[in-house]
Amino acid sequence: MPIRGVLFDVDDTLFDYSGSEEAGILAHLDELGLLARLPGPQAAVDLWRTVMEAQYARFLAGELTFRGQQGERTRQFLARLGEPGAERLSDEAAAAWFAGYAAHRDAARAAFPDAAPALAGLPPHLRLGVVSNSSADHQRDKLRAIGLLDRVGAVLVCSDQHGEPKPAPSIFHAGCAGLGLAPHEVAYVGDNYALDAEGARDAGLHAFWLDRTASGAPVGEGIRVLHSLDGLARALTA
Image (cartoon, rainbow, N blue to C red; front, side, top):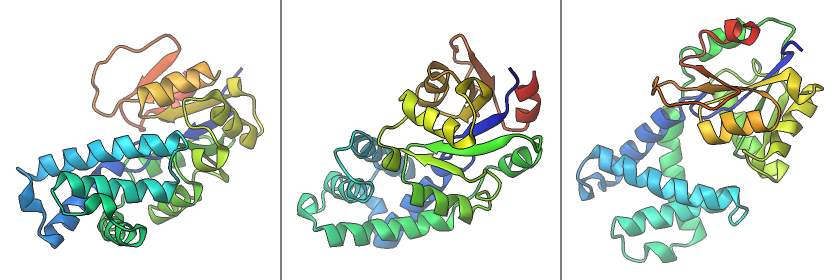
């Protein structure tokens, strides 16, 4: 059965999330005079990401709301920097601090250079959409800001509204249903091996792992590897 639709991950697949995150936290800490508290810029980025991963996992598990995890990231990060009373920071104060970071992060928003050309180069009969572990409003705003919202189609399934995150089969199946296609007619493209590639494969989709670093890591049966989106159109028909 030929592939009739493609679902995409967003962060670090179409959108350079890591780049904007790094630019955002470094600019925010520099503006606040906090960067000197860490050994260097990479230490600051590493700490921010460590805290983010822990609190975002709590959001995906349903322990925190999307905005709640932002507040907890702020509190835990400032506590690690030694800020007095950081863990007791009010919701309003935590939200204001995070908003300062987000303003710098959003100023650095960018699609990967290969994203728009790859989407434009796909056959017009393919139905396109997004499945993401995030908030639908957040991802919609992001895709609009980087000029890709109209290119990825009207289907946008996110874990916050769906109720289960990747790699649960149900979220992939919801994306396929939105396209009006069966899982075996749909390809999924994402950068996270376990969540995206293995999750899509196990849900019955055609799984494409976007390994931009060309890591050479072994892949399991039923998973195809891309090193950029440039070859996506060819890969879908190979």
